[in-house]
Length: 68
Image (tube, rainbow, N blue to C red; front, side, top):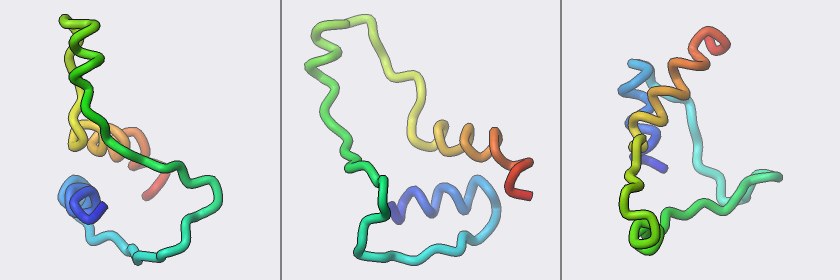
C-alpha cells in the first residue's frame, strides 16, 4: 500500500493526505496478487497488458476533473 501511495503521489505531483487504520472499512475486499503461471500455461498467448503504475495513471487521468 505504501508503494502505491508513493506512485500516486508521483503521478499526481501532490502529497496525499492518508492515514493507516487497523479496522477494515465496510465493503473492503480482501486483495491478493497470485501467481498467474497456471493461467498462462492454459493460455500461452495471453500476456499482461497493464502494470500497476499504468492502472494508477489511468485511474488518475480518468478522474482528475472530478477531483479538482
